[in-house]
Length: 288
Image 1 (tube, rainbow, N blue to C red):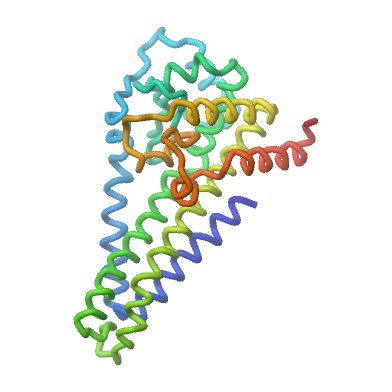
Image 2 (cartoon, one colour):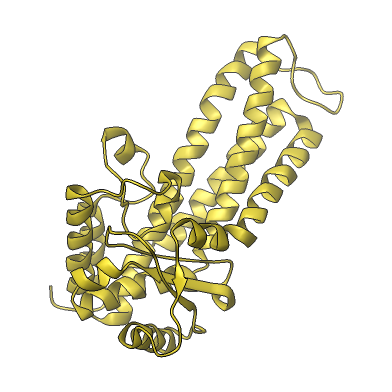
């Protein structure tokens, strides 16, 4: 269901781009904005793993270190038919974890020492299964596609805004110009709609990863209890350093929450994640 939702949302994002691009830039404008937007984000797609691992002082687990953690990752990869990712320890006090990498063959799983202390073994396994589900479903690629299209929409919107303000008619290819007032309204509203679609895609991928973890471990309650502990800690002692723009990478938002943060969150609320896991438990026939 969440995979279908992601497909529909991506299609909606592409449709929004084509509609707005056609109204403002014509065929040429659409192609140029799309190429630039995708190019910008595919550069990040190739190098974002190195950037974020460096940002959080991640250190690779050497041979013979963190044997229980590495063993859990290996066992899960075997069950999920995934190649073994690199395992990192991230330098942060807030219990959390994330996965990164452009594809399953070039992936990394990173955890904080605090999450290994906070969670029981079965809960940590659920968290690792969640992160490996992101890798298996190539969520980094999906996020990059969504970001690329959203970036292209933003570029067109900025051009449309200035065209409307300074009297440009929009549209290329010798087509009749658009109404400047219409362009101005679209330039303001279209990026907002694109942003909310992009956030919805991210939330759908989180639901999918939660369900994947509950299914592969056959312990949906472990996924729920892990999320409750991580959310509880983040609420009491949110992460003070780091970049809020990286919140989508983590299994739960480690930064301080507020009404606006929740509204624009890349993660579903805890209560909704629990309901999603409960539905997954019913589907796989696990008692709840």
